[in-house]
Amino acid sequence: MDKNKILIPVILLTVIAIILIIVLNPSSEFRELSINESKWNSIKESRIENKNLKLEDIKFNDYKLIIDEKNNTLYYSVVNDSQNKYNPRIGYNANSPNVKLAILSDEITDEKVKSNYQFKTMIYNEKEYHIYNLICTDLPILNISYDEEEEIKQKNIPMEMYLFDNLSNIPNKITISSGKVKMNEDKIIFTLHMLTPGKNKRDNKLSILNMKPNSEYILTQIKNEQEDELDKNHIVELFLNNEYKGIYSLAHTENKIQNINGNIPKLKE
Image (cartoon, rainbow, N blue to C red; front, side, top):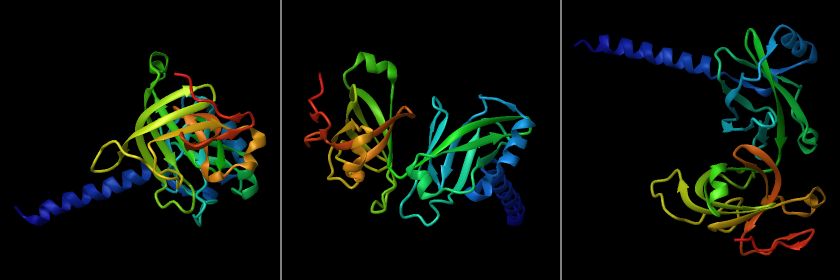
């Protein structure tokens, strides 16, 4: 068979695939998606709000954002060493075709990050729209996923951990692991059992947030008045099953952790 006859269809299919990727996975910089209030109102007034129009995923600079559907909020952890941290490249997918994205703002700034400013972010098509809040944080993001029904039945629940470490001295921004989690009021203990991705999936200790490698960690909720007193390297924005829970300190379980009430007591069995 003539090689050219084989190559031509292959090339055509490759070109079509690239075009589909570009069309179905739009990517633009933050400032390109920013619009003023007049344009924002024009889009809203010519469409119907549909809360079932959803983002399936969204990435800033190729890093996946947490989508808290319960609070209708997106969370972006600003990478400290990134040159375009305040003008990230944005890519997204929605549960409907031909969806566009717009942000009611001119730019991200230090002041807006520190004040937890909520950027209004709209996804829309020709007929419908849906609005999310977007919060930018300068803290790492930790999401623990688990079966909520199992929480009632078991003391230690199987879990998966997703950590986005935005600290400048950490080359690997994303860590994914699995293990067990135990919860008690505002104190959470989780044990890491497996490192993924990797060739050898085995029980192992893991270094997170540039801490000494360990297999068991404790999360403790931080009150507002404590935030300035604590080492930010050991503070995370915590999510459980993609739902925002607040700012927590992270430490090894053998460490003595202080809060406004003194030493944290041992968790109840």
